[in-house]
Image 1 (cartoon, helix red, strand yellow):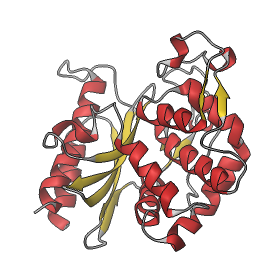
Image 2 (cartoon, one colour; image 1 turned 180 degrees about the vertical axis):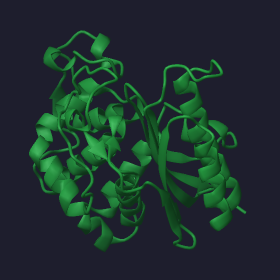
Image 3 (tube, rainbow, N blue to C red; image 1 turned 120 degrees about the horizontal axis):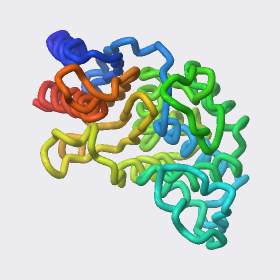
Image 4 (cartoon, rainbow, N blue to C red; image 1 turned 90 degrees about the vertical axis):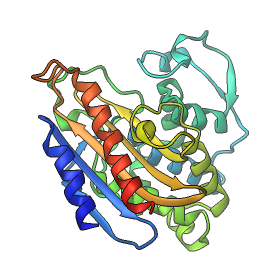
Length: 279
């Protein structure tokens, strides 16, 4: 783990922007982080906790996976996902709204889900789960420039996202852990399945062997990108890696596009962890 931590930090230090990460070796239980407790913009990584809070509401009988959800025009004023472009008034199931919220980061579905579950309830759920560095502030994010403050966006920490993913992966087989999430093993397994269906793969999976399973959620902010997920080796959960970049310049001094460099960094972190822990 020591050599791997040095490698991950060397990769981060080589870039002219802020980067932070959390790593958990699921075979040995060893963990490490780089600024893992420092709050950063969550962007769409927030949707993992929204999904799990929604599944807790399903377990409590407040919502149902098969209930109809009407897609309303008021949620379509956003820049993420596909439903923003469709004619409003159609319906999908609540389960499918969760799927679209995760796999293509659809914010029309996110806003709908947040209002159905309740923003305050989502925050209460995060607090109860131990995500004390995470603050939810909206359903559909406002359009903000690069000079926004942390108080204007939903924030989280690499450690919080790592904790959440660890609870989900253990909750899929341990009823006691699932109970901590207000859920069941079956619902935790559904959450893992949805995360593994992710269609946006330019970050954690980008440098891994073709076909490597990664259950993850990406995020794209106005000044950084991020990804949080569980990386598998064959069918075994290998490690949890959450990686966040912040204050990424539009163009690096060598002319490289900033977001390309940030995407590449996150992919490199994942490959280093996969090679070191997958032996």
